[in-house]
Length: 147
Image 1: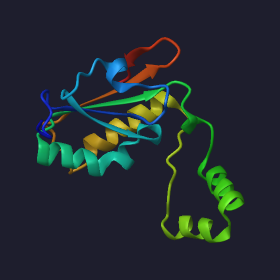
Image 2: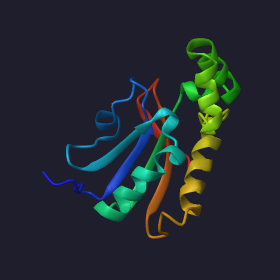
Image 3: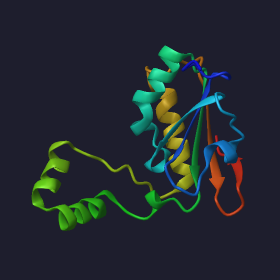
Image 4: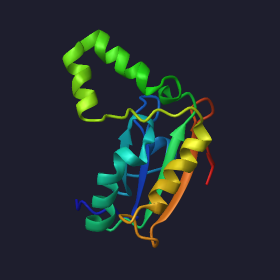
């Protein structure tokens, strides 16, 4: 099977174990590239999006965040404190040295809008690529378009 997907789109969604992208979004094997990361972050996924689009022919990005996401429950300071408590001062120093942002967000729909805007504003994603933003409701299994 080729690395190039049949339908020329990719789905960016959260790594949350409650989400099965194929079942949730009706993706058949070989249909699309699926990128998963904490919070369905476009910033975190940009490298993979560029590869998918520039090298493998993707023409559409479907960004899907979800209700009940853990990224809604903390701030960077909280994550840094947990790392320091669990892994020690050297680990948190490494986080600071690498300027690691855990990319949490306080509002779900606003985070979808912000990530779609980030991709549309990026010179790494051509204007010809269609970008949409959605929320997957884990309670119902339904999706709703945000932007």
